Image 1 (cartoon, rainbow, N blue to C red):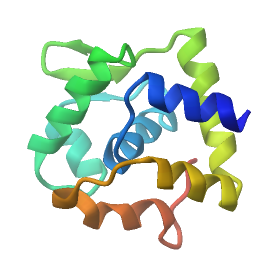
Image 2 (image 1 turned 90 degrees about the vertical axis):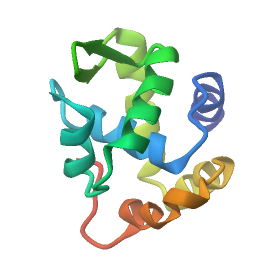
Image 3 (image 1 turned 135 degrees about the horizontal axis):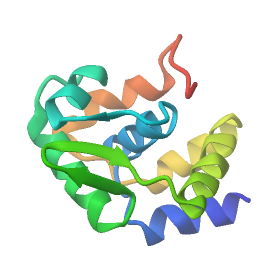
Length: 124
């Protein structure tokens, strides 16, 4: 399963912690749709500009759907299955660390790395 998850991240160009965090937020909140600013607020990121960029990249990867100025996760069987595997992989600390090491952290938004591992944060 770990190799499948790694390959999926690579294939969908999920290459930053922030993009991964946004994707997992949408996955862990089924049916959630919102504007880039609403999603930025939910993730405590403040600025919607980077969220808009990540959403556009996830949309190009076939993971996000946009209607007007609202975004939501595409809920196909493939996307659901792959994100369930990703969520399961993140439950294991060593695998989670290896997956995070695979990502290229973006220096302007590196402060948000703490959101994934800080006490009290969970994928559910």
